[in-house]
Length: 73
Image 1 (tube, rainbow, N blue to C red):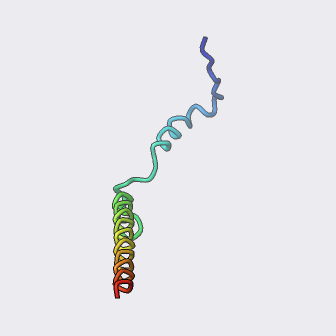
Image 2 (tube, one colour):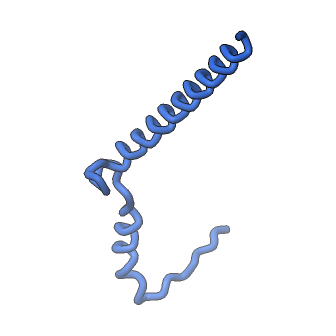
Image 3 (spheres, helix red, strand yellow):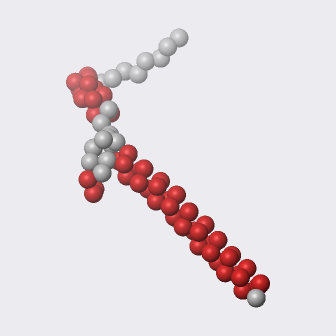
């Protein structure tokens, strides 16, 4: 047994417009702030995180080397 929800008559002409609007949304290829697309911005953010992590590791390694040098003297 299936149940159907009755749709009031005045809403019937609006349904196709609502269906079309439901397909609207952010487009990865549309230029946003700075002239880059959403996909490019995401890739730039990921690259920045990687570089920050590497920089943090490099600073940590330099600090470890400095401590080792200080202890060996």
